[in-house]
Length: 215
Image (cartoon, rainbow, N blue to C red; front, side):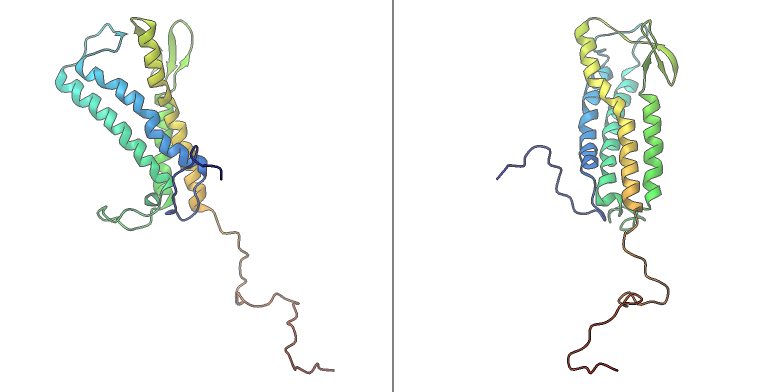
């Protein structure tokens, strides 16, 4: 027997229709993909600049600590909520949620925020190099951040670069969720006024035992 240890998605059966394996893997990998950037960001709360060379000073502790911690926690919370696009609690609201608990989630109620959020994240974290140590971003052409040595630069690149995939992954999961929730059954539709168990036109029923055929 071949052991199935690697590349096996979690055993999930709480969705109305099967979730594509790639979508399950992406959704569960997203929080881990964003975790390095969240951890790399934390020292800035205590005014440790992680090797960056900045001209301006750091904000006061009463501002930097809640801002950095809140941003890191919010990032992981949003990434974990994205798992709902591949789980049953993304189709039926959990019972403990007030007002909407136990109700079915309309597909567009999940798809629209996910797609809009994915587009915003894509624009925010996409930087196109234009030369001269400058990048084209949603804020315009900005200078790249300088580092005191190559080691700090390499660490920042490894930790921060994966965050650029956050938006595209969210959009891909939203599209897969929409297709799964809105797909129609391939069964043949039943005609108006016709029993679903009725024989099709022109079909002949087998003769019963003992029946005398008519002349």
